[in-house]
Image 1: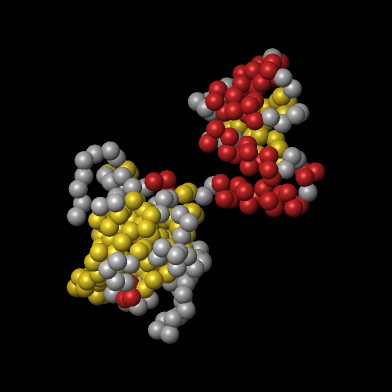
Image 2: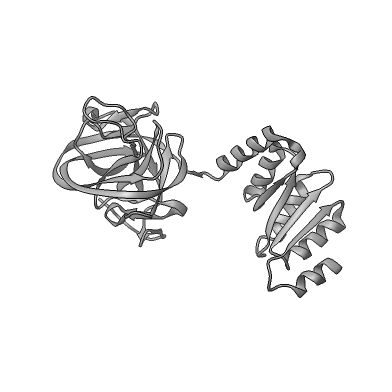
Length: 295
């Protein structure tokens, strides 16, 4: 009670309260403290999931950041995934050692990734689409083979367009670049947002997505828009057709069902590529529920 009253007295400053959970009474005290502090650190003498579940549920509308004290990477993973929401952060016991610190850091990085469902879609059409303004998105990050960006002409179906990480006899690799397609296309951004390729500029954020659907945020360093010959690419999944326009060049790749890059110049009807289907409907890049048809 004394701790809580002190917290109330200094509400104009950021506050931290640490509570050691030794029973139901201390769990209830932690909930009350969490309603009046900025950061609530909980340490369980005998670490259990249920007290953390209770605190996450009861404090979900409070402003407190819930920090779980853990002794190793395994406990950290559990804390960060509890109730599919997890604690806001973790406090690792310094006695855990360097290896556990590294493991915990990797777990945090993996859990923090956005995930996108990627399905196999069948190519139904590949044909020249005249000249168009195409966009190269250069980021401040280096991409690996298997990574690219989600791009498409329709908001309900985005193609995984591979980065220019591959060596070629035609041009040098550009592992920071995705030749993403025509200016009108959507590109996936963080937190469920999309942008038109034509809108992107230095300093914007986009998502780098790998063939497993795992995504990291990257910063746009430069956008290049140039006139190039284009290809119309159409694919079908569950009876729905999805389209995009990409530059007609051997160095532009999608990703096939084996998670390997495949050049658009080699695509044929019946081939399978990876695509992210989602609910359509966008208002200034934000997903909305509405009846929408894009063709």
